[in-house]
Structure formats: C-alpha cells, structure tokens
Length: 481
Image 1 (cartoon, rainbow, N blue to C red):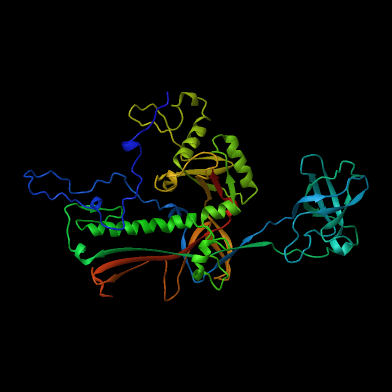
Image 2 (cartoon, rainbow, N blue to C red):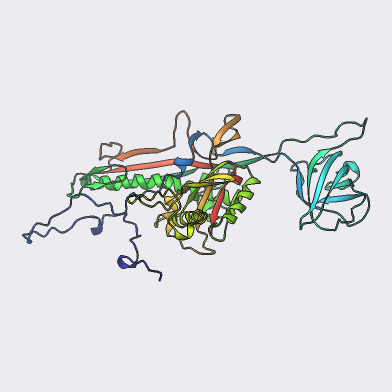
C-alpha cells in the first residue's frame, strides 16, 4: 500500500523568512525578569534547511566575459548542404517536369540555392520510392518562376510521382563532355542572433542604532559569516539572495513583447527604441531555437533513442550533461537498472561485491548510448521555494531537466572582429576601462564606516548588468511537462 507524507501543519515552511521591517518574529522578545529561572539556550542558529542557495549551474557549465555594448550579437553557422522539404509537381509520365519549391527562398536574394547541372534526390514526405534527377533549368533564368526548377529524370519516366509534397536534397552534379562550367555560386549561410543585458539591483539598509545593538544569538550564513550582530545575518542573506538572482534571472529571463506593460515600464532601458526590455534567458532560448521533450520524462531506452536521433540531426556533440530534478533522476536510474538481467530483484546492478558493510548504490552518474550522457541533480529544479514547488502534470509547464552540450563552439564575435571559442552557455557582463558592472557593491549613509550622507543608517547596494548567450541552442534539450 502506498504511503503518504505529511509534516508539521501538513506542509514544510515555504513562506519567506525575510521581512522588509523588523517584527517580533525576527527577534527574541521574552524579557520577563519576574521569572527567576534562566532558560538553557543554544546560542548558535540551527541550519534546518541546509544550504539554501540555488546558484551553481552557470558556474559549472559556462564562463563570464566582458561586453561593452547594449546589444550582444553573434553569428552561428548554417547548414552546409542544400535541402528543401516542400517540393511538388503535377503527376505525369514525361521524362522531365517542372517542380515548385514551397520553402522560403534565400533571404535577400529571393533565389533558389540550386544550380543547373546539379543532381538531386527526391522522396515523398509520406513515404515511398525515391527518384533521382538532373537539374536542367532554374528559376527566371530558365524561363520559370523564381521558385521553380526543371528536372530530367535518370529513370525512363516517373509514373510513381504524385501531386504530393516531396523532400529534395542535392547530392552532386554531372556535365557532358566539352560543356561550360557551373553557372553561379553559393554564399555561406550564417544565422545571426542577438541578446541584451538586463540590470539587476538589490539593497540592504540598517540604522546606526541597530548596528550598535548586540544579540545573544550567534547567527551564521552559507558564505561563512558569523557573529552576534543581527544585521550581519540580514546583510549577508541579501548578498546570497542577490547571487542566486544573478543566475536565476539568466535562466528565466524573457524578452518583453512589443506594446507590453514591461516594455512601457522599462522604456528608458531601450536604446533609441531599437532594443526591447527583457532578455533571452536559457529556458526561453532553448524553447524557441532548441529541442523540447514534452509528455513526461523519457524513462525507456526508446525515448532516449528518439533524443539521440534528433541530436544526430543537429551538432552531434559527443558529450552531454543532463541537469535533472529528483524524479527525472530516479527515472533515469530505474531505466538503467532495468537493463540488468537481474534487474527485477533490484539489488544486482551497480558496484555490488557482496560486502556486508557496503552501502548499496542504486544510482547512476551517466551512461553511453551513441553519445555520452552524464546526469547531475539540479538544486534549482528541486528547491520548494523556486521551481521545485511548482505544480506537476500535463500542461503545467514544469521543467524537469535540461540537456547541455559539453565543451565549446566557434562563433564570430563582433566585438573581437574574429572567430572565437566560446562555451555553449556563457554570461556577458557590461564592462569598460572605467566601469565594471559584473558585480558592484557599495555602502552609503553615515554608519558602518560610510560617510557619504547625513542618513543615520548603512545602506549596502548591489548591482549587476548581464546577459546569457546560448550558443548552438539546437544542441540543447528542454524536458518540460
């Protein structure tokens, strides 16, 4: 019988502990001197939620580098070979025929990237026999429409051709003896992408009087800050929270739609109206330019075979890391365990040498099937105060994992003016010789060593301006409900 998990008040505490004002819940207020009994107190805070930060993903897979522009642009290679998937002609039995290409023509020129003398293969999109032909006329130069070509079949006729959609690709060329050379040439097909940085800010403020008040509780934070001054805890937690936002904003950012409320509110951030508010985060870029797996986690080898076949059609990166939530990690472990001939017993897979003092390892760190796939738990997807607390199930939009190619790729960097090696994921922050906005922090007021104004307080300010660049998004996989 399946069990149920309950906790105090039915759920773990998910409400934020940080408040904008000092409340009774923030401090010890029991100063009853009529009670003659002194309580036995634990001076140090107990870290009941462990390490509460979620930032680590971009530090593992990416890098940071400066940028000195409001707009970041890069070029990615297009396909090397020519292929069209919307090609059709009228049914017939002639030895040649005019075919119409419904795909988009080459941008800027409005021409077809096929030339007279090339040889092509055509296959019906719904399946069936293929045929091969020689290109004898192309577009307006051959007296046809711009999106038409004439093909001479290598077979005696084409009785099997129907008025359906075909896929066509170029596989070579053939010319008769003594003929002139190839007419026309093809230019490289680059695809240009761009992104813009966003400005992130935060602040912590404490009055001079509160800074001079010591507490009996020794506070601590994940970055090692300790002491009996309560404001130190709040200041350091503000810093930790800002560090997390530097990463989660790069994951979740979306561009503001034209005419949206966000664009109106952030219109001053646009450069002469040419750059909209918002930015393209990792999840947005992969959902728009990459691959999305939906309908539950892939939990059988057949599912991963489909993923591998899609990767074959993209960059075919040899090594990939899958960052997963807890359930996706369990699904992968169970899938790999099932490949063992004794998997039904549940105790024979992994490194099991019958040592009575050895803990049974029921998890896997990776596997190879065509490519190398490494698995890593992603705290951001498990944290109940972040994406780990979102609803599950079909239509929820919940993200269960992200496949990231390992290594780097070569792109044309417009700032450097040359090709450069870049990680598939990296962060660009605004910087120049006089201003570095990667991670700025400064203190204002008249307390805590600051002497910049007559304000009887210390204000700690945080600022960063950055964007994430997702290169080769076609090599990424987003696993989403």
